[in-house]
Image (cartoon, rainbow, N blue to C red):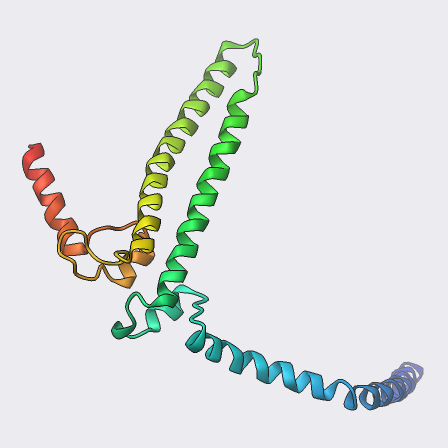
Length: 192
């Protein structure tokens, strides 16, 4: 046991000697050329986004958008944010449509009728999803046109602001919550 105690003591002494020798050259090398660049990038990212957000109007996330005051409603930064979001949605839908087209072009021959029925059912479900996406694509196109003409973010019926939380949940919204509820009540009334 005495030898076991001696080995860790000598190992510890050797281990502490090695890091000191390694740490000194790294500290000496990094202190001169790397200390200045490390300080600059750390300070620059914290100051740059705030300055960029105020001057250029860049919004990086939904939380930044919601923090803005009501006086800033549909300013250039918000319009740019929603335009980018709508374009991303449009591109995803178009990619999905291309993939579906390629998938449906594949001709698979199944000996078992059950396998064939399963594949046909999957294809029908996929086509229903693409049909819904096609309808959404029309709404996205309409929203992008409204961004260009300056009416995006305002209710088509009342002219009131739709509101950022609603637009974040549904970027293609054309009606305020109150107008949408009224519209749905009228539909329900006349549907019965």
